[in-house]
Image (cartoon, rainbow, N blue to C red; front, side, top):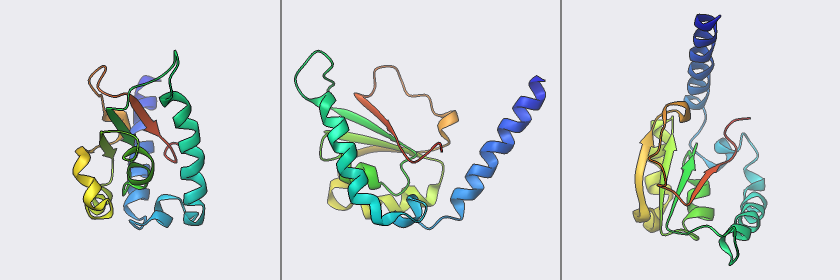
Length: 139
């Protein structure tokens, strides 16, 4: 059973990586053809996230965020960089991270790290991030 699970896991992640290699490095590509909802999505995400950035017992810091499955940096650019001092990005597709460097523009200088690997292989150091954001990735 264990070898079957490992084999299926490898196949699963390999298929996902292949899928993303064929997706255009655009906002529309990142959203599976739903690029027209990007602003609505960002605004809703901002409202959600700001609940945790306000004063109160569950408040989180605003020093460093991690964008998981970052793609070209749509979330990094429009949601995380306006709220955090620095952001790290992780994505399995190197072409997306390369595109992110131009897509992010001048604000991209606050992206400290571009990690190219699958999330299943990414292990951040404990207490490295105030927020770890994962959206439009695992479904």
